[in-house]
Image 1 (tube, rainbow, N blue to C red):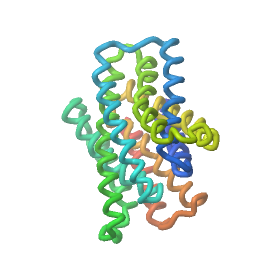
Image 2 (image 1 turned 180 degrees about the vertical axis):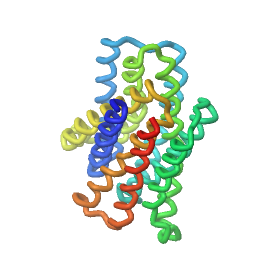
Image 3 (image 1 turned 45 degrees about the vertical axis):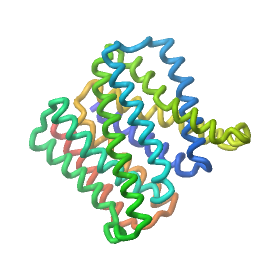
Image 4 (image 1 turned 135 degrees about the horizontal axis):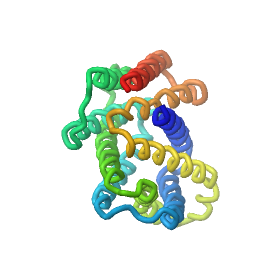
Length: 278
């Protein structure tokens, strides 16, 4: 129950982070400055908790590579799709990749109820995809980008799940994950070097809010992964689609409310079903 509640909180914070990202003026600079702030927090946390075991570091490094690939492509995806569609498409691919890795690489097992919950979750994502727009070139390009992001983020999550279990120091490993965005920071600051301070000043509140939300959301998620198997946490951790959909409907006034409301109910049912299995 505690893990379930932590995952719901992580999902809610993650959905708020997605909104902050969407409304930022310069997303590359936003990601760069955000990761610069998280690097500072990571250094402070490492001074308190210490470093994780060396056995976890290869997984951390691989996760860093996949994270930066995700950021590169997600910046392009935000230019093509509205926020709820982007979240659903990315999460759908992420779910499939992470489930397969957990089963075949980490040798996690699923009972009938857990399998049903994951299939229900997948159907909840699929419902949100407007298939009637697949023949539009701009939308097809967005889908391709989202697939790449979903694959890369799925591998990143799996690497972190393996790394934190081998770390011997989960809080130290969580602090290390805050360092993975340093390459993004370097690129963003270099590309925006003209007038950098003015841009940072204009985006300062978005940067601070985004950094805190991002760190809190992923830290809660990866900690629950440390104490539970990956496949168990997937439905509850993806309830961010529900929060993102509600925000998209009532605050951002995005289109296609019926499809997203149905999706939200399906994903909620998947999370409840997985919780019932335990």
